[in-house]
Image (cartoon, rainbow, N blue to C red; front, side):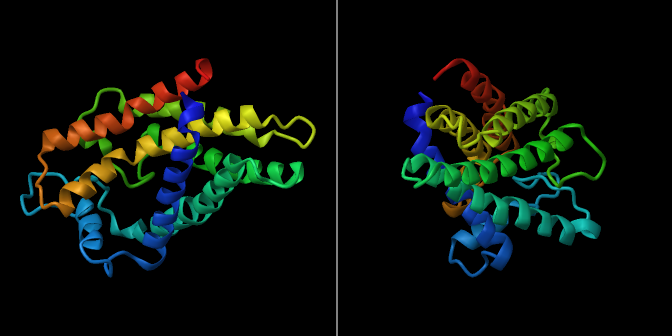
Length: 229
């Protein structure tokens, strides 16, 4: 299963990271339709009782700090790592030393975001901006913490690769699992973006379902990665 998914999810993860880089670096307001639709995901609706599709902690004091963190973490490091992931999946890397380099860049990014989501799952006060508890999803923080540990484990395994023991099949399997997880995590974002572009107003229950479809498959995918080639 993951062998078939490897290249599609690698391209999906790269698109996600590079879009984040552009978004955080230069903004998206200048893009017709798409820009306004992306912005609407994070904007509170006119009905004050309804949540924004992406419920954020509305604290202006650290807004600039988190903007920079997301730019560097998801945008810069993420784009570089996922570009490396595409190189690995191409099987056309000239030397084992180059393969090891890209494996370590890829691993570093996933260790960083795994740690980031682990800290978020612990519900540390003022850590991160997403307030997913507002959608009342049972055990979502606990499952995210477990998934974050699984992600870190897979990333460390790739990061420990050396030119002597590099097994491209094992590397690509682990990478396909992690890229599939990445693609799962932006499912709700894509759904909301399409709805906004089409002018479809989403309800609380619809948004809750999309967030459930985004968050709950992640630990399942990681578990399958351990038992299914």
